[in-house]
Length: 375
Length: 195
Image (cartoon, rainbow over all chains, first blue to last red; front, side, top):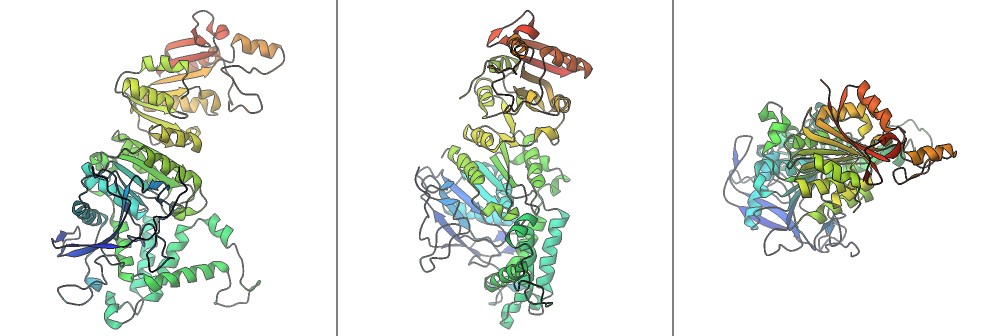
C-alpha cells in the first residue's frame, strides 16, 4: 500500500481521424479530432487499458492537473492515480472528450470544413453508440484490442454498457455507476426543461450564436441550475443550505435571499462561462435517446444478451435522477443472461453527485473490484 | 476463509454447472467453494456493506438487497438451488422468504441452528439462554430473531406445502440419525415445492 497520490502534471493529446464516422442520426462526420489524456503505462501485452467515459459536462481531463493550471484538477482525480482505486501503477487509464464536446474534440464550436464556419446547429446529433464507435477507433489507434475495463458514471455508465453491446469482445469488465439502461420520462423531462431554457434564449440564434459573437448564457445558466437541483438529494440540499437567509430575514426581493438561490446562481453562471450550449443540447439528447432495449421490443434482457463482460453495477441510495431501481433493471437483465454481475447500493446522502465523491464504502468497493481484475 | 460442515452437505446436493443463489452469502466462501468444486454460476445476496466488500475481494458475484423485502426481480424457477445457510433464523419474514426461495429456485437448501438441541434445553432449564457453537451470540447481541426447532420447521413445511426432500442433522459435525430434534445442533434441509 502506498499513500494515494495524484498522477501529477498531465497533457491532453489529439488524434485526427480522416475516415468518416457514420452516425446513428443518419449523416456522417467526414473527419474529426478526439482530445484525450492517458495516465499510467500501457503494458507490453496491452492488457491493462481502462477507458473512463465522461458524463454530461465532463471531459477527457479525468485526473491530475495541467502544467499551466495547478487548480485544473481532473473530474475523477479521487479515483484515478497511484494508490487510488483505479491504480495507475497497474492500469493504463484513458479519458476521451466525446464527439460534440467543447473541450477540443470536434463539436459544434469546431469549424465545419464544408462552410469554414463553426458547425453550430449544423453539427449532427451524436449518440452514445456514436461515441463508443469513436472511442473504439481511438483504442485501435492506441493499439488496444481489449479493455481490462470500461468505466463510467451517469451518461458515462451508458457508454460503458453500450461498449459491452457494440464490442463485447473488447471489454473484459464494465463498471456502470449511477446510470441507467434508459432514462425515465421524468428524467427526459428535466432534460427538456434544460434544452428549452437554451433554445428560447434570444442569444441562441438557432444555434449559430458564434457568428453573432454572443453565447446564450442565460439559457445555459438556467439549464445548469435545473440540473444541479436534480444532482443533489433533498437531504443534502437541506443540510448544506436549509432555509438560510443571506440577510438573516426576508427582505422581500428577487435578489438572492436564500443561500440555495445563491448557490444555484453561482453554479449556473460559472458553468455558462465555460461550457458550450450546443454541446449541452447534444449531450442531453444523447442521454434521452439511449435505449438499447428499444430495438428488442423493450426487452432489456434480450438487448443485453450480446454482452460478455463481467459487470459491477453501483447505485446510490439518494440518487433520484438515476435511481437504484434503474441499476437493478440492468442487474436483473444481466442475471437473466447468466453474466457475472455484482451490484452495490451505496448509502449516501449526496444524490446523483455521489458517484464523483470519495465515499469510503464506495471507493473500497471499487478498489476491491479493480484489484481483482487480472491484466 | 471460514469453512462450515454444512458446506459439505450442501455441496453434495449441487450438480456441476448449476445456477445457484446464496442468500445471506457472508464473505462468499460457500459460493467460492461451489465455484471451485462444482463450477456453478453463483450469485450471492447480502445487505451488509462489509460482507459485500468481502465477496468482491473473493471474486464472487454479489447483489446487494434486503431479503426481508423478498426476491422481486429474480425470475421464477431461474436457479437450480437457492441456499440459505444459517441465516433463516436471522430473518423476520420466515414464510415469505421460504416461498420466494421456492419461487426462484427449483429446490431450496436451508440450514439452521436447532434451538431444541439438548444442550440448549439444558441451558434454558438452568435458567439461561443458550450460547453454543451453533448459537454463538448472547441474547442481547444475537442477530437471530426467530428461535425454532427441527420439529417446528417440519411443521412449518407441512403447513406451507413445502416438501422436505432430504434432511440431515448434526451435532457439531457428527451426523445424527436418532432423535435429531434432541441430539442435533444444526439441521440442513433440501426442500421442494409441493404439488
